[in-house]
Structure formats: C-alpha cells, structure tokens
Amino acid sequence: MTTEVRRLRNYINGEFRDAADGRTIDVVSPVTEEVYATSPLSGQADVDAAMEAAAAAFPAWRDTTPAERQKALLKIADAFEERAEDLIAAESENTGKPIGLTRSEEIPPMVDQIRFFAGAARLLEGRSAGEYMEGLTSIVRREPVGVCAQVAPWNYPMMMAVWKFAPALAAGNTVVIKPSDTTPASTVLMAEIMGQILPKGVFNVLCGDRDTGRAMVEHPTPAMASITGSVRAGIQVAESAAKDVKRVHLELGGKAPVVVFEDADIAKTVSGVSEAGFFNAGQDCTAATRVLVHESIHDEFVTALAKAAADTKTGQPDDEDVAYGPLNNANQLKQVSGFIERLPAHAKVEAGGHRVGDKGYFYAPTVVSGLKQDDEIIQNEVFGPVITVQSFSDEKQAVEYANGVDYALASSVWTTNHSRAMRMSKNLDFGCVWINTHIPLVAEMPHGGFKKSGYGKDLSAYGFEDYTRIKHVMTSIED
Image 1: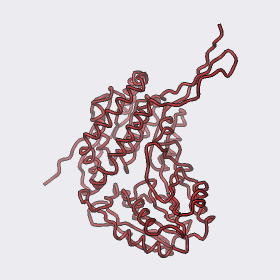
Image 2: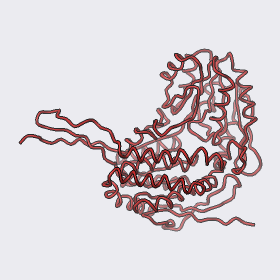
Image 3: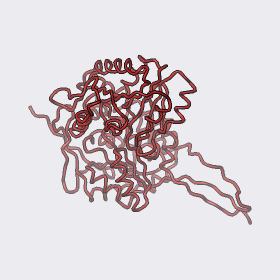
Image 4: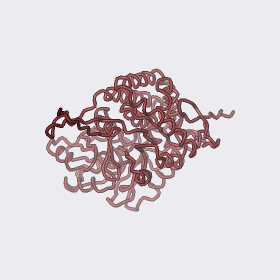
C-alpha cells in the first residue's frame, strides 16, 4: 500500500500557486524516509511575483492603525488555537517531533508570542517631543521598514515562522517568508489559516531551496532580510544584503556552555542539562550541548549524565514516552554521525554514539567526555542529541573555556553562590545567561546572540523595534 503524496503550493497575493515553471521538491519524512509531499521549487518569476504582491500591499497595511493590526494578530492567535491539532499534525509530519510535546511545548508559546506582538503594536516607545533648538520642535516617528524577506529554519518550522512574521506584521510591514525545503508543510498551513484574516499580499509564502532564499535576499524590493540558519548561510545573506544596503537580522546558531560548579545540586543539574540538551534531538541553537564541570565533581557528574542519557528515549511521534524524535534529514544524520566518528583518541563515548533503528533519522542520546578545548566537537555546532563534558579547575578557567568558541548565543551557570552567579553572568560573552536552569524563553525577553551567532533580537520589545525605522521630524513653531 502506497501513501498518497500531497502537493504543497506557494501562497502569493492571497492565492495558492505552483512554481511558475512547474518545478517541485520531494519532501521526505524523517520518520519513514519516504516522500510524503512535493513543494514548489520557486524560481525568479515566483520571487518577483511574491515581492510585487508584498510591495503592493504595503502602503495600505502600513497605514492601518496599531489597533487594527493588533486585532488581526489576535484573530490569528485564536485561529491557531482552533486549528492546533492540524498544525501539530503538519509539524510532526514535517519534523517527526513527538505529537504530545509539540502540543504542550510549541503551540502555547507560539500563540502567546503572537498575542504579545499584538499588544506591542500599540506600545511603541520613543523619546518625547521637545524643543532642542529655539523655535523648533522635534518629534521622532517609528515606521515599518517595508517588505521583509524572511527565511525560517527546519528545527522549529512553526515557531520560528511566528518569531519572524509576528513582529514584522505588528509593526506594519508585509512579509515574504520561505520555510526550509525539508519542512514546508506547517508554514503552508499557516498561510491557509492567515489568509482568512489578512488582506491579500500582506503575508506570502515561497517554498524552495537555497537558491530561492538567495533570490529573495538579492531582490531589490525587500528593505530587510531575516534568517535563522547556519553561520555560512548568515554570512552569505549579509554579503548579499550589503550590495543594496538592506537591513539584516541574523540568528545563526550556538554552542551553549553549561558551567557547573562544585556546589551545584548534581541530580537537579543533570536533570536540567539532559532535558535541555536532548530536547528536539538537540536541534536547538540554545541546546545545553557543552558542559563544563568543576574537576572535583566531574566523574560523579559524568556517571549521572550518562545514566540520564541511557534513560532518555527517542522514537515515533505517537509514542508518549519518547523525549525526542528523529534528526530532520539525511544530511543532518550524516553530520551528527560524522562528529562521533571523528572523535580524537582521548575522547570517550559514555552513552549513545550511534544511530537507532534502520529506518528514519533517529540518533541515540549521546554523552562524550575526555575532551579538550580545541577539539572539533567542542568548537563546532553538532546540532544533534550530543552533550560533551569537560572539566575545569577554577572560575577563571571556566570563563576561558566557556567563551573560547566562535558562538555566543546562550549559556547557563549552575551554582548556589549568588556572588559567583552574578560574576559569571557578567563575564560570560553570550546573549543569554541562565542561572540554575537552561532553555526557558518568554515573549517579553529578548533572544539573540553575539559574535558568529549573529545580531538582532527575536521576541520582546527589542525584537519588535528591529522591524521599525526611526525618522526625525522637525518643525518651526515661530509665527
């Protein structure tokens, strides 16, 4: 019995369309390795059409009141709640994620984030008007930037789409968004839902590959390009955008250090680290992947973490006992496996280190110890269910090791010493520092990194302001 292959389509100017030249991409299930859908392989003609639609829709959407944009976003949030099971099914099909965890860990924050930006639309802050030169009054206007070209990743297709379109639409911009070529299903469904609420052309979805994304960024119409992806992809976007001085918003991954001091509660820390390291198969730029443990508790910690890994289960999306599903695609399985295969002789695999089963891209929860600071697996992002462990002798060395990578997105410190926690939060060169926890995010607080993790903020008022521009207006008040 063969599974029917569904046809996904672009959403441009309020209509679902095939690629202009009819080209398609096979979309493969990471659970079965079978093709379950095709999506458009959008070319220049499709990019032109989407950008034209977004540009035509921009003036009217820009001129809506914040209250009107808030109302639309609140309707979208309500509609996503009403269609939650459909979105969950599409996302699980996209990614192989556990259905239960997608229902509990992704739908509620997505809906909350849309509602947050709905409220933010009506609360833009700026300096007060005033007379800074005699006879002249100055005011500051915050305006939408225009058409936004957005490229979303495959690790959180739904949620990352929300992080991009919600602040952009709330600020009065129009959007052309491209999901990953491996995970288009849930974004296309979002377009179907949002199309019942938004005016034509305000929100557009283009499916395609890297060339599609490149054409979007290079197109003269967008005023801003936003991408969540690899450092390589981010550099290419920044280089391309520089040619016509587009704004760029980059979220490019991480290598989060987890610094565990000798006074930490080992059981609590191991539980938190294993959950934050293995969640979503470690395919999270903030994942707790790189543990630094004080030498006095190193061996005890490694033993406990290896046991936690052995007790963590990966498997089918409908299995309520699994902690995570498969890696997203064959290339990602090859990448994760390659890191383990290339481990230096001094490294020791304490748990896992192998593929699970012979169908699907499942990989066992893995813990590796005995590593040195300059090892490949310490310096480069694995993006899989792999946690490395190093030891340190004192606080100075902990900071040195933690900061000694090119990434600077997220980090955590585990200690009961308040002063030390405050010093570490100051000295860790990362956009987020958690203390005695790792991975929680809230809509009100900014998410974004430094160094090769990119720039710009998601979530929060800071993320909202990234989608606005500032204009100074000065007027004479003299007769």
